Every structure is written in C-alpha cells, then in structure tokens.
Image (tube, rainbow, N blue to C red):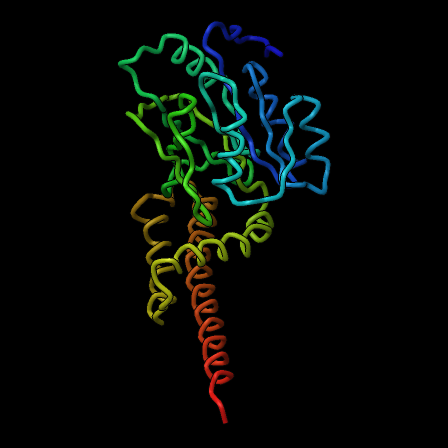
Length: 275
C-alpha cells in the first residue's frame, strides 16, 4: 500500500523489519510510517495484547515466535525478507517523510561504488518534545543495508549490526518516541539494568564501592554539563538524571548477580565436602 506523497518503489525493493512484544501503543504509528515499502515484516514475541491484530491490519507478514533475544529475533526477520534492501525499525520509531524520500532516492540510484549500509540520525522524543542535547542527538543508528550484507550479534542488550562493507550516512531522521511519560522509565528499568549487568558480567564480575558512587555522578556530569543537557531545560535535567540512575542500577545489579553466584559457589563447595 502506497502512502500519499511518496513515489512508488520501482526495480529496487525494500523490506522493513520490526520486532515486537506487547507494543499495541506503538505499532500502528510505526507501520503506518512505512506503508510505502514493498514488504513489512513484524516478528512478534507472543504478545498478550493487541499487537498482532493491529499489525495484521497493515501487513500480512506478522510472524509469531518465542523471544530468543534482540539480535536473534531481528536476524530471523532478516532471513524472511525478500527486499533488495532492508530497513530495521523499532516499534516506538517512525520514519519521517524526509527520511522516506531520501531512502527511496538513495537505493534507486545506488551503484556498486556506494556504501552497502547507511546510518540514520534519530530524534529522541522525551515527554512530548525532542531532546537535542546531552548526547541524545544525532544518536546515529545503522539501520538500512543491502540484504545479505549485515546481521546482528547476540548480546544481552544494545545489539550491534555487523556490516560486510562500507557504511554511509543519511540525513533524514527517525522519530523515536522513547519515553512519553516519567513512568515509562520505570517500566523498562528493571529489565534493562538486568540485561546490561549480565552483558557487563561477561567481562567482569567485580564491583567496587567507588563505581557505585562515582560512575553515576560522571554520567550525570557528562550528559548535563559536558554534552550541554542543560540547554534542554527541565527535560535535560530529567534525561541526565535517569541516565545516572541507569548507570547506578547496572552496577548495583552486577554486584547482586556476583553475590548470588558467590553464595551458590560456596554452597556447592560445602555440599561436596564429606563430613
């Protein structure tokens, strides 16, 4: 289905991939922003809300499977894509008209001398407004690539796209409706700090007292001061504050996981000792 105002795709085809889990609040706006592409794929992790039904109104390619991780879930979607090019889109993101036009122009005129993947700037919308400072912009993400030229690695959180070839830059932006209300931070907080702690634990399991004290402070100073978060007013304070809380939570959770593992190891050792 073609969105009014966009030229139809010809010759070179484009697929979009979105992974979901209980995204009924976001999925319609997300998919509506890419109705001009050739194939919309949604990989849903057995949502218990209306995500699947809403997605099927806009695409016949809604695939349901258990959650296996961010990278593997996206890689599964990549494997199902038939487009010459693939665009990865999170459920809380929207493709701006400027970006839609730039993508179509770029892939239609692509030659073998051009990059095989492109990074896109992302405007992060916090509490109803675009936060421009504190490191929140341009927040470039590699999301557009030729099919067969990229895949995601398998990490607990903040998965990376591994690209086989040069990477270019587009200037049209994604709109990212990350936290609409303050409570949204807390809905995600426990999940994200646990995943981040597990990933950090792959390289170290030791947490020092000064890391719990100083690292959150450094995060706040960096976001609010060095990266000029103060220019976003009260939103800049809140953004930097939650970033600092996230840093504290990650290290606190890492300490907790290490303490649990230590107790488990001690218990197993004691059980193995004969009286």
